[in-house]
Image 1 (cartoon, rainbow, N blue to C red):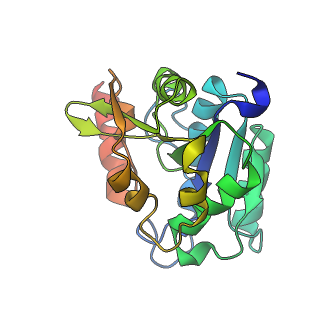
Image 2 (image 1 turned 45 degrees about the vertical axis):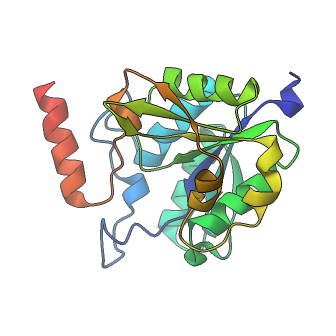
Length: 210
């Protein structure tokens, strides 16, 4: 498969992180990752570096750089080697952000949708999902301890369905229509999704014990 037709990663980094800081004064995606091999580095950077280790092309869907925090996030992700896709309608939900990312790489051989608030994902897990998509699976996802995790892969044949996504349901409708091939992995990081300050503290404590 040529580089142009290989799967690409889409890193969803356009959320406001309201559950982390309801007042909007602290950027969740710039907070220090509490777990994983990139522990201590900005959360979104940790997620981006894992993707970059497994895929040559990573697109990060972001909000407009209209605040100092957003400007810093753009700079951080660009420095990590991500291509930025600015979604001016990020508040409409993650479905639109997925569609924006797919539109920016519509000729790819598939897409791996990843979340910027998951800092401990193993590159081997990403590679396993990449290979499932590259070898023909319509959708694919890792499974750890009986739970489905991230990233979730989508084949090129689903381009139209992904481009039509809107709202805050992400790609659930596409996965409902095309059940993912499940890939067993030894990677608890594929489940570690940090939304609140308490999530950060629990992950930090678990890392300290480990």
